[in-house]
Image 1 (tube, rainbow, N blue to C red):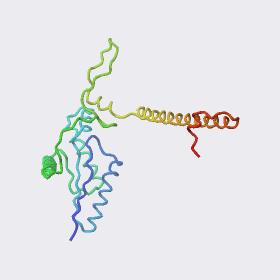
Image 2 (cartoon, one colour; image 1 turned 120 degrees about the vertical axis):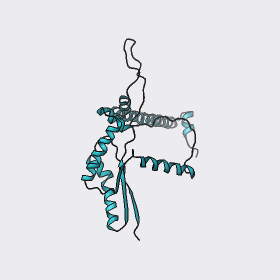
Image 3 (tube, rainbow, N blue to C red; image 1 turned 45 degrees about the vertical axis):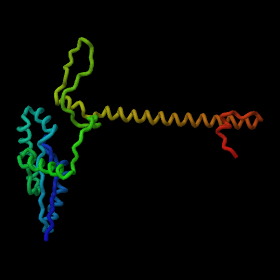
Length: 223
């Protein structure tokens, strides 16, 4: 009896056309796996679609002067046509904005909750994840001179762009790490030099018949 093989491929965002690098990452490996099992006579279901929810899609729509619906419709058509032209053998290629997708996703989470696999709890709001790609909302402008008239808040696009880590911030973190490392090395060298100087002072005192300092006696191991 043939095995039933479900191939769940990653869902590409509809915030632009997918290039060959994307397809090589999510499409080609899954397609090879599905074709292999079809050749073995197994019952294969290879499913994916375009991900049409989320901030990247909204930002792209705003950049092109389109409504979110117009933008995702445009890129769903482009991505679907490209994947079909490349010969990827999806059994079902759909969209996250379909009614069926909404019903199925809600049913999955509802079933998991009813069976006790999801726990409902209240917790304190955590800080944003470091390196978060997007941050949507309004942000207060930094303080400026009294005569400047900076806007009180930025647009969603500006706020999102400002939260993307830059190469300069990466260099700042790197230089900070190097400074910390340098301080640790300099501290270790200072301790080593003080210890070596104390040992030398004790040795000279012993050779000349003088009294060994309290510091030298405290660091000398009992015989």
